[in-house]
Image 1 (spheres, rainbow, N blue to C red):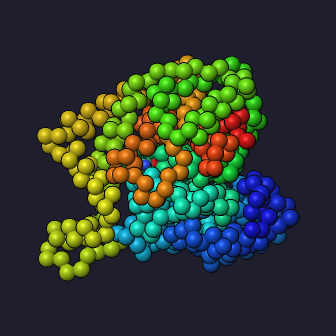
Image 2: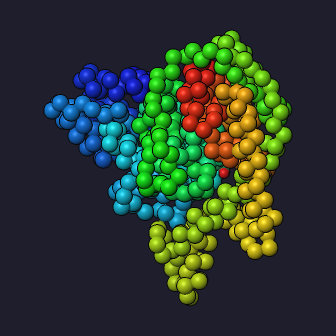
Image 3: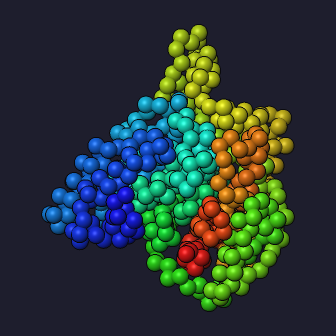
Length: 472
Ligand code: GLN
């Protein structure tokens, strides 16, 4: 691998800006790395020609004195559920195979506006439904740390790409952990900002009241920096916050009197010994850095998995109704009539996990069951959010592992329920809309462990302060 790929995102941007290296050379090195490690299957689409042309264009601009751009000439990977004008976007579903968006998502626009070179669209679970990347129509991604294991999901391709040095940073989406859990499994940093910090416009929706785009990088600093580029208010997303995240370089020191809460219910649910070891060590490091750690009880968190799955399946049912064989993507052949066209198209081109969730969602929303499932789950969501926010009244961050285990093998789970249960530590942040991230720890065993830091709404600075103190 070319040594330039080991630089940090911010370093390589500075090198490009000051003419120490060209964007073209860096982009070529990244694309060579993508080829060398192609067996990982991290990309659904590599936009080789566009990336090389774009890098040359940026180099020409620099030569002419145009040196602005927070990501000037830097190769970045984008999850395949963000619209990229002229570049295929599929959300890893057969139903969208061959779909080329006529417009850019706001996140894509912001990346390009900052001078990024988009090298491709990363593989993911179909419509972001999954925790292992095994539901992708284009086949699973391999974990670069151990090819016999999953990279996590749903943003498995983005996490693997960053871990394998194919790019300097990547974009993912997180509805219930899809940035943090693959970051943990692949040993990189993954950030899900506060709901509303990053525009969802042009993102392929799974569950609109949960979905949030965020960043992957190999350091806390780079991940925070990249977040500041894609964050900010957007009139085209009605849940967009007024203020975006503004980058401040974390200095690795905790603010005076920093308080950390650790929910007992989560510690009890750790399954792997290495996760337990790494988590204790993380608590120890924050204590040594001056934090006050308090163990808290949050029994309501036991309800987060059922609440999450009822609500996201219901929202997905509504969001995915647009894939009907008429408006987008593929259409089944020889239908008898319109209803048959819908039915055949969706039967043929949607995957098993997607169909399962659409059926669950329709069930939870159907008359007679609406009050018992959907409405009840909405109420429990409020209780969970209130309890989490109450803890933030006493603590700056909540510390947990990102997942109960390290990266598991392919086909490791006995059924969907086991997979859903493994999201236990990540879904509460999405239910509450607060910020959360995963920081890797390599100290406890052969595979990396992710440490999750949750912070209150718009408290990204506190989260990054704790992350920088933990990073090693
Ligand atoms: N694993 C979770 C699920 O399957 C999270 C998905 C996500 O965040 N997109 O729903």
